[in-house]
Length: 487
Image (cartoon, rainbow, N blue to C red; front, side):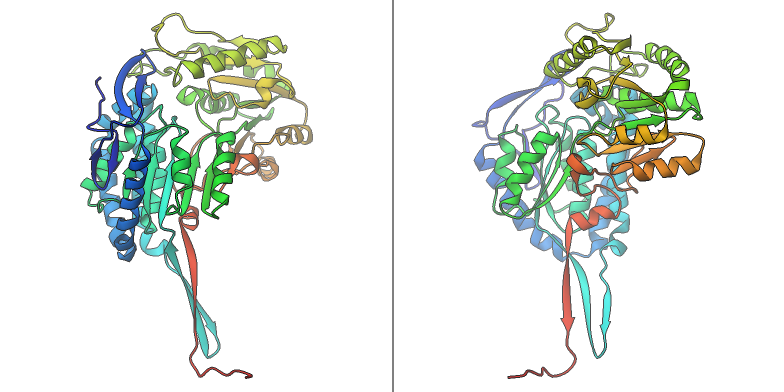
């Protein structure tokens, strides 16, 4: 077991084990190899983690934002120094190719620590409100103990995206990674302690869907931030609402990517591939409904097919590999089931559609798959597949495609490719989505807010907007004279 951690949980600044918790295995999706065995959190572990966070948060909140930021910036430096080590761990954890993780995973987590560490002194300021002889001021105060619940696709990034704004606002965090990818968050916790974070402020506990409710329903938890599916989001939001806890939901999507006939076709094909095949299609914001104007459909599909079939699929630890496996066997079977539904409902299979031959049979691989002639009512056009399956749909004009693009319960992301900038801005303004791109796709630097609308969630991650979701305003009225009362 080449990635076995010292223990399953990280609480109060050190590794902690409770062998009474159910054993689960961390599987390398490329080979089926067991790389670690861990124990799920028992109720006692949950209590210990939350108590540690609650105790540590009091003193942390008294520190200046600048002092807190200094620790986060040091954590960013350590992550960059260890990028290769962290990237290899991320590849084992997720099955994503090392050529991807080394540029997109720990580095984006480090960006988050650096950004929030750097803006702390200004972003947490309040305002002065003159009221004649009297005056008032506002201040941002922490929420308390925050819970982060992560997804499997970007485990280290998500651990940082939730941890950085929570910590800089003066909160403590208890983070639960996906049971499919339990390893990276433990290293993030280690690095934060090494960077000088006081013990107890960032705790990591393992578990499955039975562990989440123990955290969400805990009376000492003030905020829950989830990255996950819409069904999971509904359950977590419902549970949190009972105690009026603060909630951020970053959920799934079935996002539209619109290609007009005046677009640069090579760029549009590249954007569609990045929006469907990066991370083996396991990205919530993916533009999985690719609407292509009919006059350029043939050329678009021709170039897309050639480039898709040239993707190098193989060993994720080989730097030449461009696409690895999906996360586990269950997800592989689910995706293959959707592919069969696409065929049965009449979509045209352009390329892919099966398990590649030149890889380990023990791995959870799927060929990058493209369907054409997809119609809006097909299952593959309506449901989130979360795998490397692209649906190409035809359209005639702008009004039509906008109506169809918005005809979904989801509203996470969207994109448009066109050389007409007036149209580009007009179209994205009408797309019902929280994050949209013009002539690119899936770029999410920490400086910009990320999040969805409709069933894709609420709240925002990253940017200064995240400060609003990990703190709250306190208003102070200052009277400068005597109180006059009518009685």
